[in-house]
Image: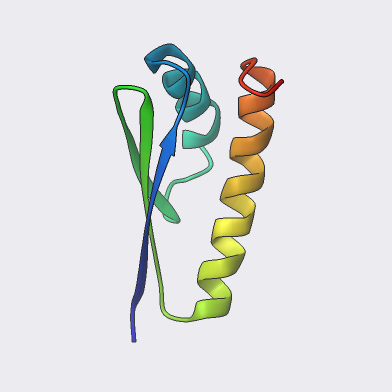
Length: 75
């Protein structure tokens, strides 16, 4: 079985989306495929098991959260 998840993350503007993307993209290789479209980061995750998918998503979202805070996106 393969499990696939698509995330669409909206940011305040394209600059913030690109800044956050660049901050997390280096660690994504082999785990997450992502790109920027305007003010959005579109990310795809695929796994063989639900626990593995959840672990990858948890790590990715934690990194995104930190990058967003640094970029000034969270008040």
